[in-house]
Image 1 (cartoon, one colour):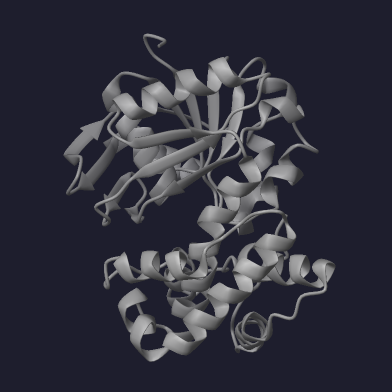
Image 2 (cartoon, rainbow, N blue to C red):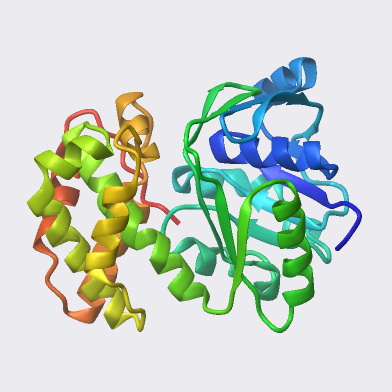
Length: 306
């Protein structure tokens, strides 16, 4: 395992700020790529994480508008709605021998990023966590869990495993997997139903588990059918049990974004599901109803996604 990592974090929101904080405390050299406003706040006050699992602590991290130094990894933690506009901060030739590791929701962003950056430099990854940016420089983790999965290939396995080791040393639960599509679907199969239902109902996970039980069961079944057409097995009963095990107070980021009047990741989640279903010739009536309702709600701003 390397003594330390040189890491850039593109987008120091809830997830990015969390990763920047725990990696910096663990000893990695971290530079945050962000707007002038966010960079100024972090530069003046540092980065603070408040977490039941990791404690409350402050770290100093460097900030920059553009990536201009060698890195082992660039962690992409912006929302899908922000991805295209954010990539100007990381020019393709600035990656060098480093890896670009996106922790975005959805299924389509990895392929998109491989059209912009060297394909073998882009490592599919997922993170399971509930973390929010209270204000620039202040991150609050509200979930008891913080787990990361990354998919390695023959070309990048050593580098991926080195980064995984540092994330593990920082206190996260980390797993390196072989099948990136299965890895992405495993998260999507739980997140997409929860995000669509909590946003549609304007309620936390506990609320939709009871009020929208029939929709939850049907939606998970639709997701599993589309995943199967993609060559990935999802157990609907197991996924429902997993949803039932989530803390009832948990909110999804899409639900929070809607409540705050921000653009929501409807295209990256619901849109991606509908596109794959259409390609496979599979009817997904519950998903379509939810997506159509959310699209038509007055005042919502819907991204076209990557």
